[in-house]
Image (cartoon, rainbow, N blue to C red; front, side):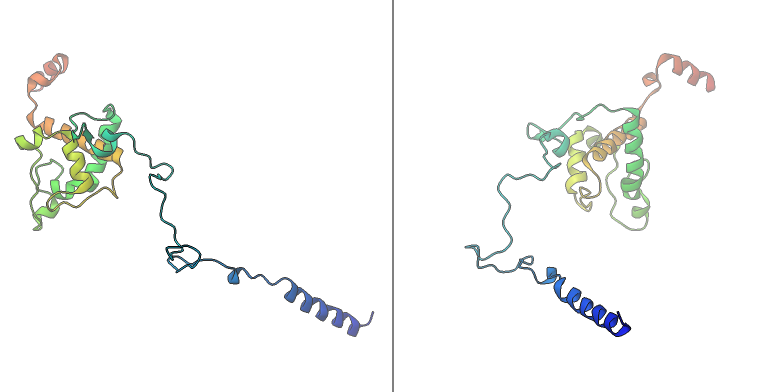
Length: 192
């Protein structure tokens, strides 16, 4: 085969391959989001969600865990046992999300407040110590007063961990020597 014939075969192969293998994915029939449709009676291409449909992983049957309520009242109990790990996680999350306004002591004199933002109540007031845990869950979830909702930033389990840590903060400010176990109390008295 001559060079001219080889060139001709190559050229014909190139022409056939480019026309025969054209992909029309960019030109296929489809509806763009929110485009009008003549197919459906309501004229919309996007279909409404089927009633009572829940996305996988989003079924929230535990009312206490996800709403902080029990029998339509703010819960007084936690939905899971409070362990050292839960308190450590609550401490970490509190320092990140809460301490800028509420301070690390929970007295409401955080750095944001020191720079002119509205003063939140101290967690050590009687009304705050007596508030049920479900009240704190609701405030973190939905916001209250000048406080914005943290539902999109703090998952429910971490909200409960923060509340457990707040309870520990409240207890730490009102604890007495009689609250310390006897064997540790003797060591405290020796240290004085």
